[in-house]
Every structure is written in C-alpha cells, then in structure tokens.
Amino acid sequence: MRILCGLSICFTFAATSLALSKTLRRSFSLQRSLSMLSAVPSANVDLISKNSDSAYEFSGVDLGAVLKSHKKAILFAVPGAFTPTCSAKHLPGFVQNVENLKSKGVEAVYCLSVNDKYVMRAWAEATEGCKDSGIILVADGNGDFTKAMGLSKDATGSKMGIRCTRFAAIIEDGNISSLQVDEQGFEKSSAENILSLL
Image (cartoon, rainbow, N blue to C red):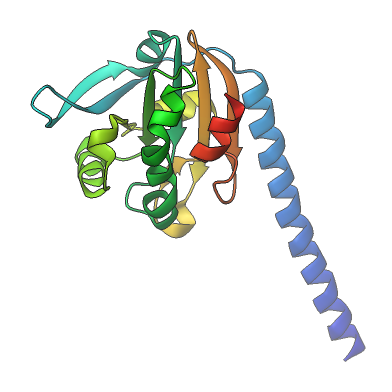
C-alpha cells in the first residue's frame, strides 16, 4: 500500500511538473515573440465594415497596411465570435467605450478573430450597438495575421482548432506601442484597461 501510495504521489508530481513546464515554455516563447515585435506585421484578411448605406460590406486587405494608415488605432482580438466572454464582455466593452477611446485620439477600433467573414458579420449584427459604434471586424480566416503576431492559440482540446490568443494593442504610426495579452480572462485586453493606457 505504501509503495502504491508513493507511486501515485510520484506520478501526480510528474504530471504537475510537465504541465508547469509546458506553461513556462509557452510563456517564454510568447514573451520572446512579443519582445521582437514592434511594427505591425503584414497579412491578408477580410474587413467587415459599415458602408454609406449602413450595411456591412467585405473588403480583402493587408491589415498591416491598413493599420499603418492611422495615426493611432486599437486592435483587439478574441478567441472566437459568439463565444461567451467575447460576446458578453469583450466586444461590448469596446462598443461602450468607442467614444471615450476616440476622445484620446484613437482614429479606429478593429476587432479580430480567426473566423470567416460571414461569421464575423453575423456576430457584429447580433451585438447590440456594434454597427453604430463603427468598430471594424477583422476576419483572420486562415490565421495568417495571428501567426505573424506570434499569438496563435491551440484550442483543439475544445474542438476549436487554432485560434488567436486574446489581446489588445495600441498602434501608433504603424508601430505597436502597447500590447496587452490575456492567457486567461480579459482584464489586460479590456477596453477599460486600454483606455487607462492612452
């Protein structure tokens, strides 16, 4: 019995150590990627934005080039459209704070997810106030921009494939002046926190 108990403790310790090691490696890799990043990377995505008739339209663009066209812009990313935290808190938080952000000199706010453009349009239409807020949705369908940022997230355990780690960035003249990443929760990348950093 003592031997079995000892083996159980050893296996538990080994499993815990392995999980901690993976977390530390992930954290180190993420921090290294972010420390090497300053200019916004280039990648083709689909934008979902409101046209003159107040209807959403699609446009394929180089997101890096678009972001560089602004003096100051906000890009925030969520793991998935229609997911609980993203729909109940993250996107609505930016919808509610758009005018406050603009009062701080922000010209445009972009919301990115590794979803296709049709899902992103449906999500925007289903989110109260999103269309009127002027927030531009970014469909990073192939995850190219996410990969270029070094922020891909393996969500295969939740049957969601490869997604984007939740983050928010303040971008000035095409350079990332502040990058807030949430491995868990959304406190760092919330609209309220980004507003406090401007």
